[in-house]
Length: 402
Image (tube, rainbow, N blue to C red):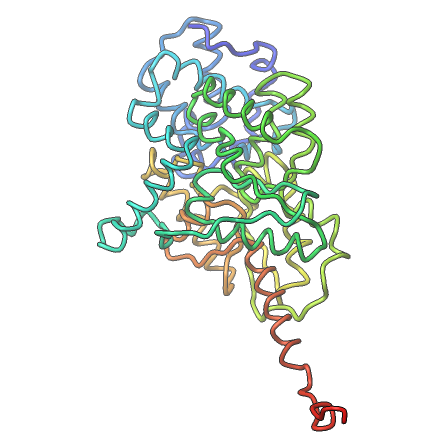
């Protein structure tokens, strides 16, 4: 069977095994077929030797979290993420993976009104205690105030699920960027979905349609700030996904919001840090794909008392977009390792720049917060403190001139 993989990319892998310690599914199972090396070996057998696509092969591919933690560890720079995406797309096109229920679940992502309607229904179900707590959903809003533009210096990409479920994160990000002196245009319904979840699920055609729709809506003239690590990684990869010069120009304008703010820290006001010890959980698509995770530390450092590094070398938390829904058992085992590392850190809060990670960790009773929310809280606390320090006018100032 032709998986439509580039044979040169397949042959880059020399099966050295240096990727194994950085693969979350291999770490929790010890199975070669659930490692990057093993999955690439199966890709070769299927594509080059016409091996059958058995249930075991499909399980090997579908249990990959697509965290791409193997890529920075690989001395040969194997493009594992792109290989896995293409293999899954070929299998999805033949309906061997990504069942109908999952395809239907993705449809509202590109329809803001339908997504908001579903969110309100889910919020009602939450209040009636019909939503299992193990899903880790924060209390969903039944109504949200829209985000208003304050200028045209930068776009703030709001996306789909995050905008419907965690709009307060966008609001905090906009507040911080404005505090640095920049006008912000939230994308809102103009660009409702980046296609990241579709790419992970092997729905390549849908992902390309959404990518082009996003490019057409936003253009390539100003920076596009993204506060969801998964969305940012997908949008920075539009050049590969679409293979056009326009897509490459667009991708060059995409920045993780901390990546962009780290270049403008001198423009943020100096404030009293929050009295918090904060552990940083790097989302995989920020650390392993965008590779700009250090910016989170640069941005947070002035605004909290202490930053704490986890001792697990950035291993995945198991969220993986929709992975925690499609592979709950493995996702739970992977999360257990992350939670143990968090407990060893003994922090007050965990900062995570990806909605999937924060919800997945919250389901294990880990208190999480987006870095932008922390910075916004520090700015707000400082502003309130300053207003309290303004002296009341004395009696002479209150007297009218005769």
